[in-house]
Amino acid sequence: MVRTGMSYGNRHAVYAGSMRPATIVITVFAFGLAGLMAQDQPPQIPPELAQYQTWMKAAAGARGAAMKSIQAKNVAAAAASAKTVAENFDLMANFWKSKGKADAQAFSETARDAAKAAAAASTPEEQQAAMQKSGPTCTGCHNIYRDGNNFKGL
Ligand code: HEC
Image 1: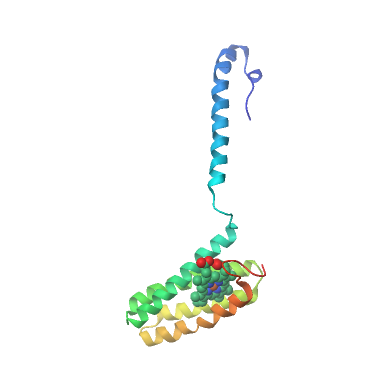
Image 2: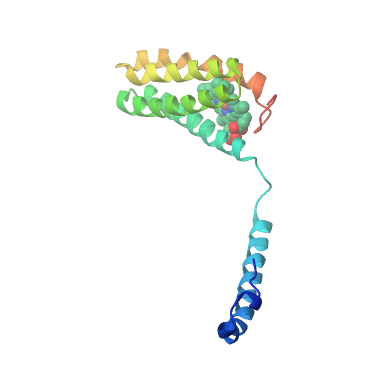
């Protein structure tokens, strides 16, 4: 990485000689900074789990929001939240598919389809009935694959 003066022709010897210390200082500074940044990082969460958590949190949060909007009989707001639920469970279904876990994929697809139906429904009652179909998927999947804020059996 650090070039030596040897690779420069004689004509550049003075130039190379004057630049090298600066290059070294910058290199040492860059490595030092990288080291400091590494120390500042929180305990490592595997990227895969971190990604899954953003989906799960988004889905659960949007589901709560959808339920509230259904209670308030705000069909449009409930539909918008239900759409977010569906989108995130779709991403989770793909994740489980890539892991070859057909049962978890099926739970995710059931939750996704329930939210999709809620988003398409036109009355609070229909929305409520549709969202309720996603309920059993939560505990069904958590019992098999969730250990606190972590995966189980992966
Ligand atoms: C296909 C499997 C699956 C389904 C279906 C599922 N979950 Fe999860 N959930 C998990 C796993 C695995 C974790 C642990 C990893 C994590 O914390 O993200 C988890 C974690 C969570 C968390 C904690 C997220 C965090 O890390 O802060 C919440 C909240 C949650 N689920 C809510 C729900 C709700 C509500 C439903 C149903 C609408 C549901 N889940 C359906 C697999 C699932």
